[in-house]
View 1 (cartoon, rainbow over the protein chains, first blue to last red):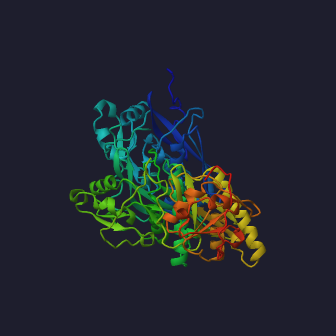
View 2 (cartoon, rainbow over the protein chains, first blue to last red):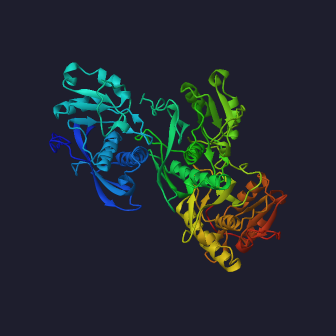
View 3 (spheres, one colour):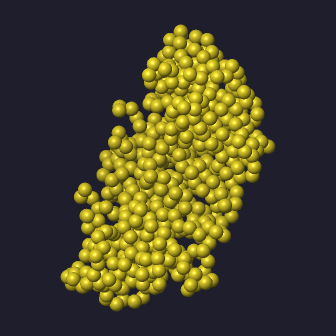
Length: 208
Length: 208
Length: 208
């Protein structure tokens, strides 16, 4: 009580390969968080994802969904890249003692896994939020206002929201949005997000 | 409270391979839902199904039953198709944070697995509901009225109900049924549902 | 309340290979149920049984006992039949959302597994009930009267009870027994039940 729930805003000056900035929403307000993906083991039949960071059931499932989607995406688009097919990946969300839950880091985990598998870092000063379905559809999330404020406070310049959250974003004051670009989210573009359309729509999801 | 429990009605304009529209029934009324099946891994002895989407025990079992039936069905009818014998499939039901339960998505899961295994999409604007037994018999389900209303609201044109629910369907007003065709359900016809007989019968099942 | 607990009496007009009719006993009265056994996977070292249908601990154990007994029985009597030695079987008891418990489906599960392994259907209009020990001894069960009424109502013509339940059966009125034959149960005869001796004895089992 009285303490920020997530206090690792400054953990990375620039995000290395496998690390992507996400956005969380708590009763205390919004916050940035980091999703870190790292190859643990490689070999025939090793494909797996292991998640740590005091994650709740919904978040754990969302990591598994993100992993299945990322595997299929690489299989279809980059058939010569076998890292997700042969690699056991460990995905962690610091801080290790802060309980976290909710499906909205799905996009961030897909992107972290793609970044690790393709060995390319994600564009700096980018943050994203959005639930991912097994086929890569992006579902709306909650806490758009709180997450936008947190992104701005942390020096984020490009924000990726589900397009279904556009209305929520449009309702924000100019001040809240100052210095930010918001992009519609397509996981397929995850590892090279270059678009900058200002689009987000309404959501009725209750959790983070 | 006052919020729709499932809000992803518009997640798909048209359902791709492996995705089938189902119908759910909650205390808030009916709703469409999507069952998404995706190949996670292929190899000798990998046959398995993994389910996510905050599913309760009954729904988890219904996925396992649907998987066993779909495997046997493909083994008997399409002996050259080994995808279900060699593939580990991930089946997800968005939204990831909405708890779901009940056996009535059995038919939908069988169809999603057959669609994924046979790499053929299911006819668009089709929705189905029905519990499946291990031999492919279809058991009656609850909430026929609520599910019919939800299907109509979501632009569904063909509805597949258990034949044991025919009486429930026949009791609906013409207005509720407007624009809908209802078909008796045979999982064996799942991936090519072309029939359109207006038949559904009575049910005494209490759950969704 | 006021609803039948098992409403799938008419699920099968005639039982296919692997499906056997059992009898259940609830506070609401007796009921028929179906035990469905289906080969899920075959291969060296795959022998296993997987059970679904919201089964309680006692029923789950009774399935495992039935599986061990059926494997040994086939090994001794039909040494050329390796299906139970190499096959992973899925056994389901519809309806999927109705919780069930108790050991008295043991005989029914043995018979369903033998039917599946030997690829022979069980004689139609036959129902059975009886707890099985690991060596195939049949223990008495409860609810003889309720189960007899349910069998008669469902068009069952031959009823197999534990011989220890003979006295319970003999105490029934002629009307209750009208049209029924009752046979003493030997699992060894399970897949070809041709006897029709009218014998059943007393039981002290409390559960269904």
